[in-house]
Length: 207
Length: 160
View (cartoon, helix red, strand yellow):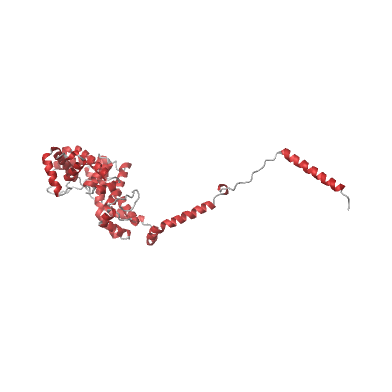
């Protein structure tokens, strides 16, 4: 576990130092602590997209996701002087990100996402226009499916959503997700099973 | 074999298998079970469909000026005070606690010394006796009588 940035708490786990010894990100962070700005740039380059994508899928609003991601990296930078590499860097990073996302959802900062679920043109990646582009029908079907997926994920309770996103897209282990969510490993398993059960029910017709 | 989805451990294994996170040896045993268990087969099929649906959900591109904005905010954080303190930052981190404790002690002493007299603890005062007017009149009468007695004694004394 890294330092204790604002809004986060320290969690002691047994996995700590061994995992951190092998964690090159933690080594980079130690260099940042020693004043090496280039190492911070490397960490930013490596984790920028995963963090923003995670936050985007959590709050489903690109502007809010980037604003939260700025805060995540700012907190990482602020915490450099007190950083101790006692756990995997990504676990600490996603702990901060999850904390901020849950706060944002609780405060309703990203309530606008409901309006945008049907407006793919605002949030969706820019489409490539080329000769072999899909037909209008295919695009519409894909967007409809995507809309359903987004709504299904948005309908999950915030902690279940965070657990699924870290499990699916970040490929994090149960122990890491547990640390990020400040709960036990068995609680994470329970969150994931309930979340996937809901998703299977909601997305059954897409099988 | 008992249906895997009936136990939590079995469901965990099925979830791991559905998401491609099981080892080769375990896969063989699970696949053998799936051939004979329709319920588990259905579970795996539906979980894989969820997984595939989530795979299609791409996140948008990151704004081009994300880094610039971040570094601008970092630059704001690094104020002139921070620049001045940078060489002694480590020292402050480790030495900060005793310095803070000493400062707190000095402030506490200062506050105590500067307290208004009314707020300071007072020593217990001597008890005050209440004198009634009659007692005063009696005392004056007694003094007058003693004065008369003294002057009569002087008058009666033989002159040397």
